Length: 84
Image (cartoon, rainbow, N blue to C red; front, side, top):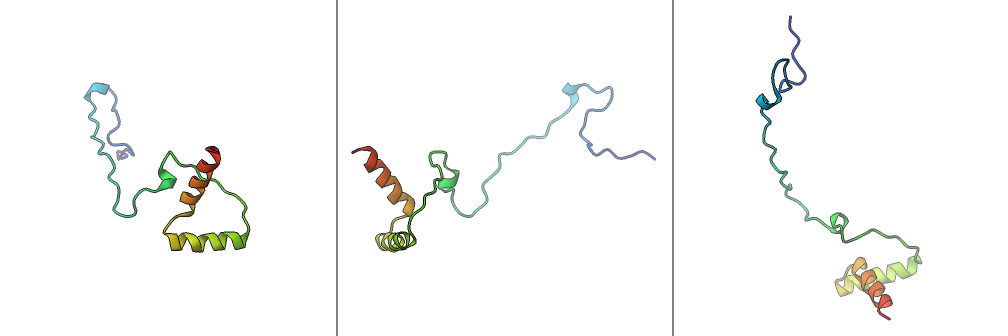
């Protein structure tokens, strides 16, 4: 009994490489869902800092009221700091 190969498309003895057909690789389509965010954007890096709980809580409430994100506020403050 002949064993079945784990690699049916592998080069067989006596077969030249030019005779092997390689299936076309289709580019992966993004699955529907959430759009790519800052984490996958190479222009952004993740940082962390220690801040007081009460300060963060107050800032989060203010940002919600203003319709902004914390990362946007931090970016603006850091840019302002560099420009002084």
